[in-house]
Length: 335
Image (cartoon, rainbow, N blue to C red; front, top):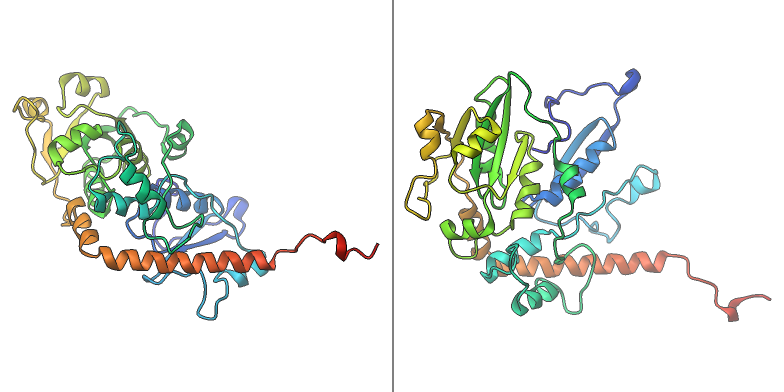
């Protein structure tokens, strides 16, 4: 799914530079409700070697082994352990909370409400718990984050420019399947994804959608290997100006309902008039609505799991602190 490593066939291991043996990198996690923080971790891991293997474990977290040891203790002792820099401002915990609270505080134009702020300080935490892994932090978009995910390539002569538009909220396998099908429509595709403003998505989706704001959705879509460019805040109607500006050859939409524009018009009226509109069936029945319903149904189970997870992480942090060398007190000095 991630852009880094695009083109590497599954099961094929290329030699490293100069013919040296390839450096194999192992990275693991639960990857529940994959977001751009996970994509960024995998991007960093892939950059550490030539071949990336990703392990997806069960719903039990692996911070500690059954006997209370660090699960990475052996590789650390062997000097083969590396850490990826965490992506601040995104976590599965935060995304779940947005679904459950049914507020719009996460939208790009909204101030954080007192209710959401209280949630951010306490949701899913064990009593008195505070640790750097489980919890909520506020997302801050920067140009560097976009650069890390963007391809930086413009369409080349002979490439087919394909335009798709939507919310792409909680970017999931259904979106990936759709974009893969779109990508396969041409021999040399250049796929542009238009992402609607938060307020526009809320107009046609209702409730507190989108769950992820525009900046977060941008990074999620940019991380997908099938997307070459993203229009941040694309107009809902696919206009003649947009088609001409990007020199679009084909406009695609999935099998989801096409909601009329504010004036009741068809947002795909212009590409249909030009004969360049087509609908693509992703073959997946997973939707953002279905993911939200799963979370709401399993709320109590999730909160209990999150509290247990943080309690273990805090115990691990405390154990690590006790292992750190303590500064010598003046009374302990032999002089």
